[in-house]
Length: 199
Image 1: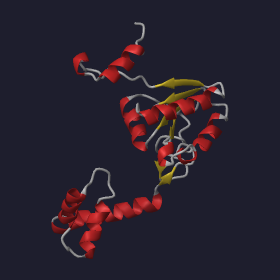
Image 2: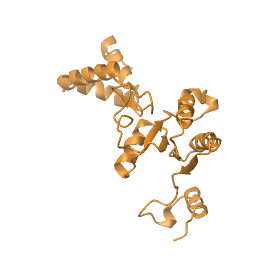
Image 3: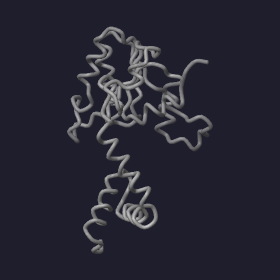
Image 4: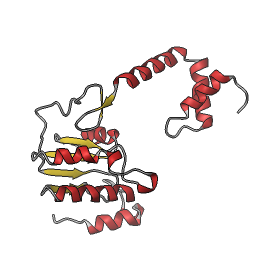
């Protein structure tokens, strides 16, 4: 990188902490903020600083929240006998936008990955076990990603739930709505075929 001065280089490097942002994209963002949108840069800096000061994890479900209990966990109208396990906070938003699910959530903030040093503690599994042992949970819905790590995580959690006589369900995997069989990859087609249902 050319010598742009420590302030500019620090800003470029700061943008690189975002997922999918490489050196060129970070440089474009930094130059855009400095040359064309200083007001936007000021708003971004203030919003980021404010969020870092005020946003934490919900004490119950571990989603990002500005209060100890998020609005979902504090809502008495939601079902307390179902809990949907997801990997990331963005998964909660996706499920709520696409479905009418009104149960509880639990956010792992990742998946089991022993090679990367991510074990049950890092995913909040002890907190999940506490929730499962409160006797109000009747169904655990596993909504982890259909990856090797996501499947391993789902299997681990299903064993915890089964040991407490809790029903476990898993999101269906298979052919996307509107998809054509000839374009579906063999792994997805195999899972869809094995998981076929009566109609």
